[in-house]
Length: 633
Image (spheres, one colour):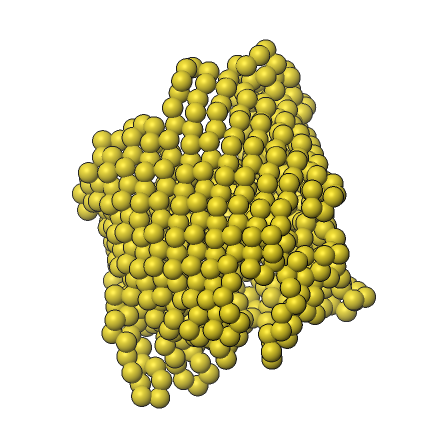
């Protein structure tokens, strides 16, 4: 691992007297009990789940380039990436890979039965209000949980403002370092990427349109020399419309709509084939329409009805293996009820029908109908000092002709003010995707063969965690012990996916947040995640770790506030895994409120110009400087 960027450290020192920031909300869990004045059953709770929240204030302070980078700010959470802007990025939660995690937008499931994953690079930062990451149990989503965890991306809603129009802009520059045997320099790297977003906001409506153009032509280490990344260009257009209207005091309508189109070059499949003449086009459109009725009956406080439809198409142009098209349709109808059972009880019920229809060049035409029923609730004892939170979901899947259950039980105990104990146990299943079941036999030459297995069984996972939280004044601390047992896991390493894998994860998360003064806030967190690969008869005594799981991860952010300036320096240590080297990353963001209507920022990603990878064979970018801002009028 090489580290460069001395000039960046000088820049940091020069700008240190300009640092400023706003009030920062802790990245820690959001499960704590808040007793309502009227009824214990109205208390806000996340069913004792371990949850991290990335707030709108933090999103503004970090000025992150991608949604995956924001998600990765939470402890216990990381992401895989195969390059810069527009490249495939998906989430990893406490060692559970992307197919074991569920991605939601505004509470609606985006994960598809085609491949079970969601590319976070298709979700622009500009439309996000906040992000909730559930690492155990059902969290605020209530009706379900996952083997790994869940990410719920909440989009911006209408609000009253005197400046309804906003224009956000950014230019990104890579260092024009010497590369190749001739020591060439690509000076166009100074204008490598441009981002532009335009939005309109009023009380009921938010409209956002924008786009990105990037060459992603960065240099990376190629053994003894440096090479220039090519065929990684991105051209993206996106838009979102959120609208809500109250028909009466007890009836409200809302609609959330989102679309993105990406045209990009793609990395090759191995380091020796990193920049082929391949390309990729991605289209995604989603609409969710909801009705909320309140005070329906004496016992039914609120009734929600949701209709959702999403269309996605991915086209791959492959020089070596030919073209392929994957078209995905996903639709759902959902009814949720919030029941009034008295002061010490709460109950939410949910009935959901969903359809996955996939027409894939490779996996064929496949349909999955799913009907699920769920209930989750809370029971409060000892005047709210103790609460218990059970949840149960049972789904029937038509193509597998099988029932798929998941369940969780959480508890919160508050023996004294500002001090909580919490515990959660949960069980979840992950059903095989169409690609795992039906992919045809494919010979990839020197890279081996692959084909689907129609006899796959669901993966099964048990999770448990126990934690404490202490908050006193400007100081908060959280410690969590967790364990995860995944068996019947699907392993594709032998050319055909089969249910052979068994793995266990044991670890701890520690998070500290402190407001040192009116100027400084600090957040620091540490994850220890010890994994055991128990496949093929291996035992704990063999001490074989799961491939790609980092045992140690540490993260920290220092926020500095002064007058019209705000800044954050964030650091991340990624420990070594069985297949990846360790890396230390440092980022800087400085924002200035130039006037009431203009906000400008300078962000420096990978300040130390560290060479690193998140997926073997795909080098990540070095130092990137981004200058941008938002003009409101």
